[in-house]
Image (cartoon, rainbow, N blue to C red; front, side, top):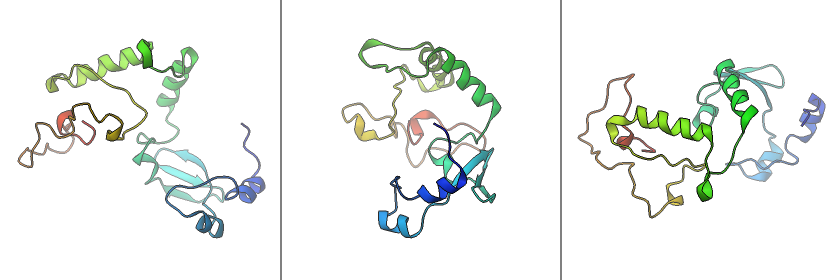
Length: 157
C-alpha cells in the first residue's frame, strides 16, 4: 500500500474508516487527527505537531515507536514466517522459543503451559481455569517499584 499525498489524506480522513468509541456523525463533523509518524514515545501529526503518545501503549505499542531493535527482530522473523495459526496441532519455531522463555521467566509461579491468543477477552475461554486472581488477595504484598508482579496476581495472569 502506498500512502497518498497529504491532500488525499485530508480529503479522505473521515470518509471510509469507522472510528471506535465515537459516533460516526461526530467523526464526520470533527474529522480525526491524522498521525503520520511515531518515534519513541512521541507521535507527529500531518501538520508537524508533536505529541506524547498516551494511547498507543494501551494496546500494542507499549515499547514505543520506531525502535530499531524491535524492527530487526520483526524482519528476522518475517524473513522466515510472519504468522501461522497454532490451531489443530501446529506451531512455529518463534512460538516454541517464546513459550520456553516465558516458562523460564515464570518459573517461580509453577506455570507449565502458555496459551497464545489474539484476544485478551477472558470470555473467549469460559471453561478454562482462571489464573487472574487465584492465590491473590487484598492482603497480598505489593512488590516494590521495578519488581515484577507475579503472573498469578497480574491483570492477565
